[in-house]
Length: 72
Image (cartoon, rainbow, N blue to C red; front, side, top):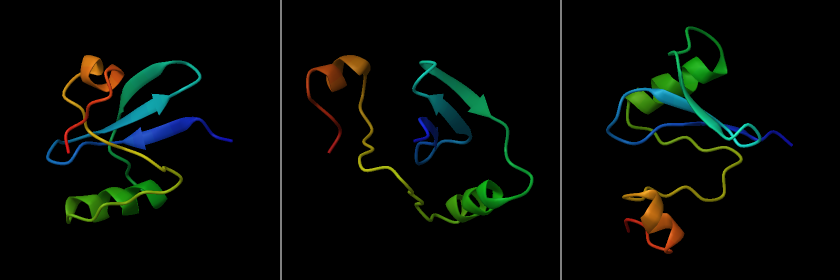
C-alpha cells in the first residue's frame, strides 16, 4: 500500500507531498499534465477531491492534535 499523500488546505495555494515512511513533507510543483493536473484544476473551481483517505481534519497546532482537539 502506498504511504504517500498529496494534500492542500482550503484557502491556501500549493500542494504538499507527505511521505509517511520517510517522515517528510515537501512542496509539490503544480502538475502540468495527467490526473493530478485534472484534480488541481477541479480544486481551483472549489471541488474537494479525496481518494483513499478516511480522515483529514485541520488543526490549529500539533499540540492540539496530540491532545485530541481539532477545528470543528
